[in-house]
Length: 71
Image (tube, rainbow, N blue to C red; front, side, top):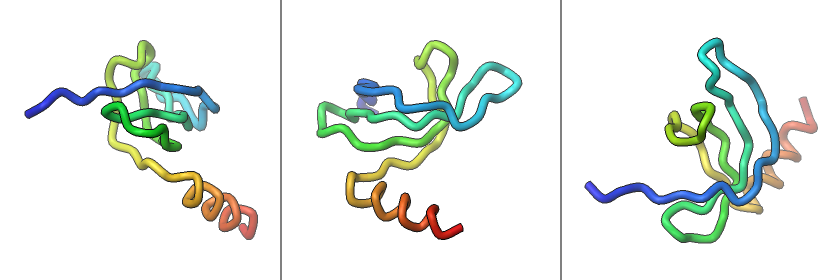
């Protein structure tokens, strides 16, 4: 299995913090040298390990913003 390459281009904010120091964060992340996408997932304190998450394009994040404004 090939190695996953990533670069956190911009740290946007922390959504939640777990008891073991892991934080659920919204970041702009480039995966495998691709264009950066919005990314929501849990990260270890040093950003070396990550949990499962979701990545969104600019259009998808704007749509999510619209949906969230209705609740």
